[in-house]
Amino acid sequence: MLKLVAYLTHILTSWAIISILNMSSQPSACDRRMVNFCPGVQSNHFINYTPDDAVTLGYRQKRVQDLKEEVRRELKTAAGKPSQQLSFIDAVKRLGVAYHFEEEIEKELGDIYDNYHDSDDLYYVSPRFRLLRQQGYNVSCDVFKRFKDENCSFKKRLINKDVEGLLGLYEAAHLRVQGEDMVDEALAFTTAHHKVLVQHLNYPLAEKVIRALPFGDACRGRREGLTYPSTKMKLHIVKLYRSLQS
Image (tube, rainbow, N blue to C red; front, top):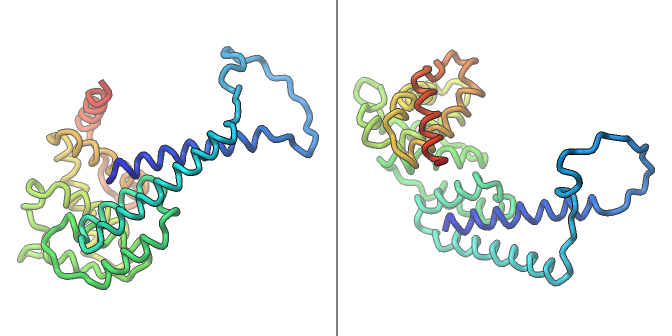
């Protein structure tokens, strides 16, 4: 299912590039002054482009439409399975093709909002909170009370036993609003523990945590007084990336 969305993204990206190149190949109505730039070391090899013929263009257009329909079918297939629905919608949004399926996503998220039942699965509760708030739904942060202990602190078992859920909570915490102290606590809790856990995680979970952490740190960390990764952790991240690329 996710491979289907990734392939659709690749096709749509290629299609966008082709459209831009076709537009740039059209003659301009206004005269522009000529500028004599120094010749590049690669000559004109990489700017030569031959537009697709009508047959190839038609095939590409049909392929894009077929993939869109297949994604819509997958969304309908996941109906009645909230966790699977959320994972699929999240993937579509992250890949930047959600604007092709706005009506379908709105309908599925509406159903998820209307048919919610209390759950102890943080990996389900967190993306539900985040995606619904992104869509404009009024979702209470009280859904996270189930994950706090008698001392009103987030349960320590989440640190080692539910790393995926912890990552989901970290991402959901960035959708907080002013006055939501519990979500502020969730952000501080997950940030602190992810920076320690990432040194002991394996691929692909380690990569997901690494990709998530810089976003929160860069956008909000300095403003909110959060600590940044230590030198030791940065070296671990560099080593991990090199191992992933080799």
